[in-house]
Image 1 (cartoon, one colour):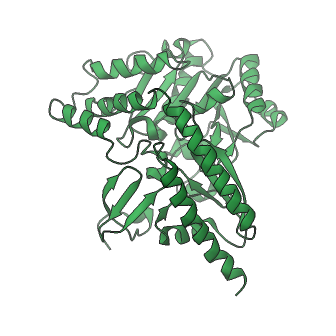
Image 2: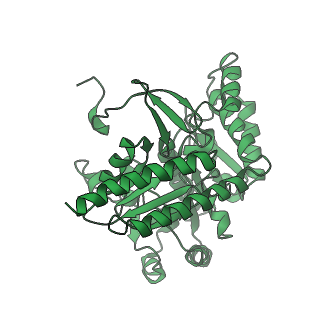
Length: 395
């Protein structure tokens, strides 16, 4: 036992170096990283542009707090607004902070506009919005809530793709609809474009705010800067984090002017949010993500990886049911009695790192910079991993 709380179990692998899509452990073994820090290391490890930006900033200024103007924070906010639906941005440190802040902003908007009774949010079954008490309550996963008392009030959960249930859940107290365009922890389940459009229409009809959780889907993960761009539906508020700064802790709340105008001085805050180090790396990350042809390359890599995974699913039909997701946010549905954990462990034995998700899905969330070499290597490793599980069926 070490002095770290055992909330993550007892990991047995320690990494000491990363290069591109690869990690090297303390024993010198190389792994192909298709976990990317759970969709965080969007540009891989030790990307030279990010390293240079961080080193330059670290030699000048680390932290001053938001009592003072931070020029790179203003620059990043203006860039993000120019590339999205948003008119203003609040910076924080993580995805759960971004989502909790998004819910706060939705409640504040209604209170400031004469409807303080509107404070509840409608969320979806199998959602995941973070680990604070409020965000755990937004999902009400019994496993995550066990031992933490009664869930916080203010969230009404409805089935996915069921507009009748959603409309029935709307009351005079409803302030917002909060959804992930692709449910990540819930099993890499994309919400249908038509459903997102219906959510937008319902929000407009009843005077609600539409909040998108793009913590995992944002910043190029699906082949667009933000996943909601595929549907043409825009939210009023959006929470982001993970890939926003390529591995440096950073989160953001993007909002329309109408929402931002109600978040007046003192209504929200963050000591570390938007600090100079995070802003330097986030701006550098955005440089790369918005470079000519970068997102097109992500889609090309996605097509090759999906084709290879579907081939594996066809050949190992006792192990895999199907492949789903979008861009480089992909999940393999593992067929019972096999488990995603067992397949993930078999893949790790072959030098490939993956991440489990709900609904017995194994996630592949590689750095967005992968190419044909890394894709071929990943498919070869997954082939051997599937074969090892399939062989057990014949024992």
